[in-house]
Length: 489
Image (cartoon, rainbow, N blue to C red; front, side, top):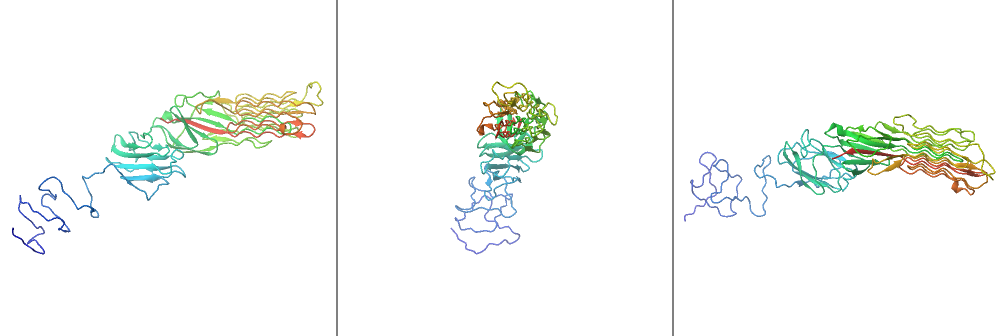
């Protein structure tokens, strides 16, 4: 075998150097060739002349494309490059081939998908396991689709991680991997806020304090963008001294049975159409002490008025009006609080009862024994007080909007007055969180009216007076509530 040793082979003309003729086999000893460029004359392709495998580099080497170069034919392996150095905490736009960690612990936000072409892949995972509290909305680019539907998708399951691959323009982005549940484009309402539960095909958002009902996307069927709602205001405070029961907070409800089916109250009206926007929620507090109405509750265009306070002793010549009216009294007043103030239809409440201030007294009594009126409830007015006991609070309204029957907005029972004689009975509270009026007695503490139940809008009970020096205070009203129900699947 002949041997030629040279330092350099250069072309005589042009830039190509040919080694061997067509059909020849040229061997190069392993790992001794270093070159800045390798060119082939067969259409720009490197061809293995004996077999089908071409190896680039040696074990442990890295193969890199030059700056500005691109690759074709290799494809992705179904994985993404996870962006561990950039945890997402606010709305962002994803890129093909990347995976993201989304931190929604401080609030909900949106991941905008890139303009998809076949084979694109994007992943995301719940970084802080807070999707169930603050969801991550997945929004397609323009009119592109998620699972065949051109709408956004809210991820609202704790610890959820998903991977989307863009298949074609018919189905768009398809979820190919989900650690907790199947994710497809949802054509129904998507929203966040409050405490979220489900009942059948409906989601229920319950607000027991102020918040925001955030609608991130609406239904592709216009008729399904109608929500059921319940708005109950805070109940009034019972009257002190010898006081009337307080009126319940205003009660307003609406639903469209074909969209959000459930058994509503007798006061149910039509449902409410929503759009993709933020709806601030106000939940009214109950009246804190004698002489105070409850506070209003608000959702969208619906305001329920706080309950009216119960009549206070004989020194105050008025009684509160509101969602439901407070109970009045005798001894120079006798008025009752007006319900459904301001007026709406269906009525949000009823009037309170009047008190008793005259008539025959029980045998052995040393002084008059007067009962104050009970506060009005959502469906029934407060009862009048008698000569021996306070009036009963009016009953509230029962609805199944949360998935089970709950009664709201009961009126408070009236208190009583008498001289030094055996104790007399305060009026019972109305069904739906109304508190009982106190039964007067010597010694004091029992003369304080009961407090309305929290998040029912129940009225506070009236205080009682035991001559000569045991004057009780009225009970506080119960806070209100806002509930929103809609079709989500």
